[in-house]
Structure formats: structure tokens, C-alpha cells
Length: 349
Image 1 (cartoon, rainbow, N blue to C red):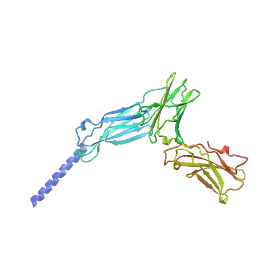
Image 2: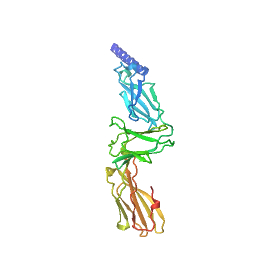
Image 3: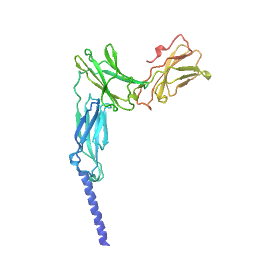
Image 4: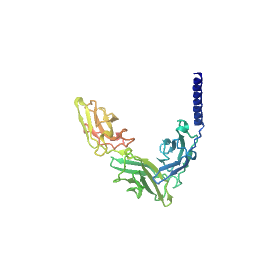
């Protein structure tokens, strides 16, 4: 029995030593960062492909599963984005007028690290500078793209701060369902200059990044480019409501009803804003805006010498789109119908 007990203690001690060595090997294991980091531009207006190779020191270590941590500076959100992947490629969207900054680590796991995730202490980094193209200050301003009633999209832009003789802007666009970049199908012209792009008749996908570049040229040289990326479901502007009904209810209440605009926008995706302009018996004016989720509104009882006017507008709510444009205001409906003084001066544009 004593010898058996001694052997058991000896075996346990040896096992502890082996485990300790494995742990120490795990902590002492040097993991190198990836190699051959590259940023490839296929000409898709900022949709870049990032590639890298595993470190040479780990090529023959098949028993160690390799993971990579990619970090890139999101030039649209102005912060770092972190991705972990087993792949050696990744695509991301960048603003090509700014530095493209990426870095990548190696992460190791498995038997060679005793099941512990080990990250390389250093990383491989690459910074791609934007090309110096175009005269400074010639970028177009206030580019706005509106998906009108979910039927067609139009983009408009303003003049650049620096004036050049006869500038001619050009718009290009691309999304993942396209093979190559295409030019604007139809330009909007004002006083001989291009001021926008009409995508009417062009099918654009929902929930997909659409990359747009507006650049151009003039007799003096090239214009600075502008890059934007958008998804059309976030650019919707509903049509204005054209059917409002105002009537008196029991207890002298006012009941306002209206109809959703005809079109492709689901009714459950709309939220409403009602503008209520009120003129009291003494001629005093007041105005308020009321948020509504339904296409009706009831107001408290009113005095017979009061005048109440209403108009409504709508937009996509946050559960259907990240953002939206308000529709134009509807026409105004009032009770009583006629009055000497109107509320046109009270209206919000």
C-alpha cells in the first residue's frame, strides 16, 4: 500500500508538471501578425477588398486553428470597426477622399495554446492615401437623394464654393447587383449646368449600399470628387396627403380624418404630424404640432367663435427605416370654413 500511494502521488506530480509546462508554453508562445496585407480597389466607388496571408511561422501549424482580427477606420461613421474572421479577405466601404486605414492581428487557439485564445502582440497595418485629384474647393455641396414615394429616386446637389468656368459634374453609381459602375441615366439641367440625377425607370435594390460619386471637369481642370453611400429605404419621402375630412362630433368635438397617400409605402410604416392653428374669440393666435400614429385625431370641445385649421404630413417611422424625409404639407382644412383672417403666416415650410 505505501508504494502504491507513493506512485499515485508521483504520477499526480508529473501530471501537474506537464500541465504547468503546457501553460507556460501557452504564455511564452509568440504569435506573429499576418503578412502581405493589401487593399484592392476594383473600381466600385469605395467598396474595397482587404486581403492578407497567415504568418510564415504558422503555415505548417495545422493543429492550431487560426483566427484573424481586422480593424478598419470607418470613414463614414468616424470610428474603428472590428471584425473577427477565419477568412483571409474582407470587403468594406470607404470614403476615397480620406485615408483608408486597416490593421490585422493573428489569433491562435487549439492544442498548441492549451485551448487558450492567444492574440499577436503586434499587428500589420496599412494606410492608403487618397489620390490628389481635382482643384481644392470644387466639391459639390448639399448632395441630397430622395426616394419619392418609393417609386423613383432623384439626387440633387449645389454649387461648389470655388467657382470655375463651365464646370460639368458627372455622377457614377454602383451596388452589389451591378457588374460595373454606371453613369447617371438622366441629368437634371439648370441654366446649362448639371444640378442633379434622375433615376426614374432605374431599378435600385432595397437594404443594399448604393455607392455614388459626383466628380467632373472644367476647362481649367478636374473637380474634386465626392463619395456617398446610401440605402434607398432610408431616403423615402412620401407624397403629400390630399384628402382631409374635418367634422364636428358629439359634445362639440372636432374630428379630423385623412387618407394615406397612394403608392408603395406600407401604411403601417407611416407616422404623422398634424399642425393645428387656432384663433380664439378675441383674435389671439396659437399653433401646435401633434404627433399621430393613426389617420385620425379628435380634439376637445371648441367655442363657436373660435376658428381651427389643420394640415398634415407624414414620414417613415423608425421601425421601417433608419431615417426619412417629411412629406410636403397637405392643403389646409378649417372649421368654420370661411373667415376673414387665415393662418398662412403661421405655416411651417
